[in-house]
Image 1 (cartoon, rainbow, N blue to C red):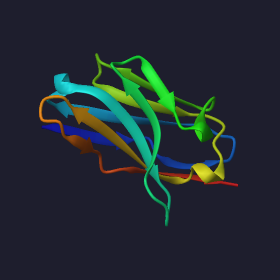
Image 2 (cartoon, helix red, strand yellow; image 1 turned 60 degrees about the vertical axis):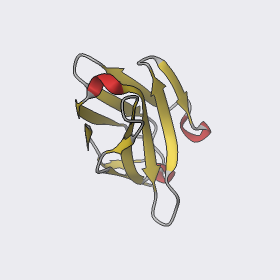
Image 3 (tube, rainbow, N blue to C red; image 1 turned 135 degrees about the vertical axis):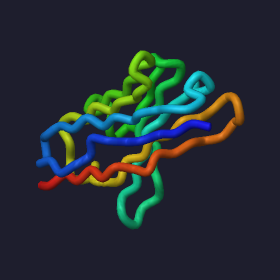
Length: 117
């Protein structure tokens, strides 16, 4: 079992920055791939960023150059640094982890990010 808890969301003006954090607990050693997803009202959940093994990263085109995903194994956290935020980044952001032990996807409860124009 893996538990994920997001934090760091909030309200920010366009052009501003926020840093999301996902605290992990439980069978952390079974996690190889972690992701950030987001879901805006009326839209499907969208993959934003992926980190594999702690250092291999990928991003959806719309956030490349603005968002950075990272993982701190010592602190058991995964972060998403979001810079130059745009109103279209407004969404609930979810932390996701895939466990190699039980081959399950685990999700956090989500954190709201609102970017005002």
